[in-house]
Image: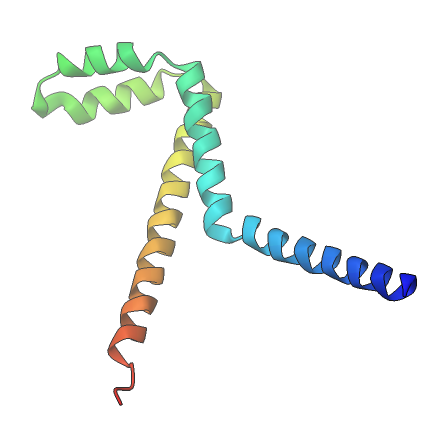
Length: 113
């Protein structure tokens, strides 16, 4: 009796481990986590309020020039983080779009009884 209880507990422990590992390590969650970490790192390294204040005084015609100039004149770490933010955001948008597309295709091919 005790052996079967231990066996059952060990099996259930492994099942729970696999379940939570798959749930946590889904690619979309990892990308969202990396994106959040990059955003937090940029927010702690850069004064977002000052950037917003400076950007509000820029004319629309020179906004792109302002952004490029600000990016070029920032630290290397911030440049890497900003590039990481854009890459992770694009990958997340792609994953969300493909998930929605797959969901829509499942809806359209549903067999009606």
